[in-house]
Image 1 (cartoon, rainbow, N blue to C red):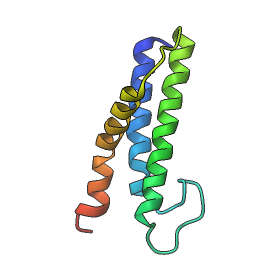
Image 2 (cartoon, helix red, strand yellow):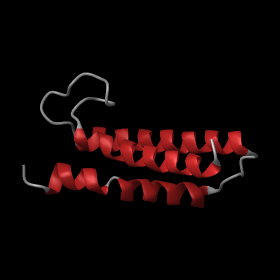
Image 3 (cartoon, rainbow, N blue to C red):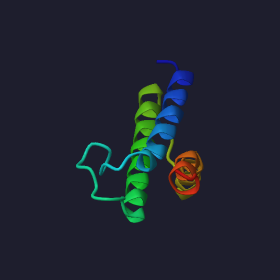
Length: 99
């Protein structure tokens, strides 16, 4: 896999995992269906888990393409806020759009 394809894979994976907590009512996507609506803290925990999975995938792909560079807290803060930005369409669909 080329480096460009790896970057696109991470970005598409981040977009999908950022919006999954908002588009389904199952716990952790594959768990049992929540009775009623999921609490916002559950959605936030799923969002944090998706962010961790995205960072893990990115670090894995970086390690397979060469030496993984050490990252400081600034990198992880930027990734987290980018992940929140990617989650905006799902948030709008869940909470701001009238169903």
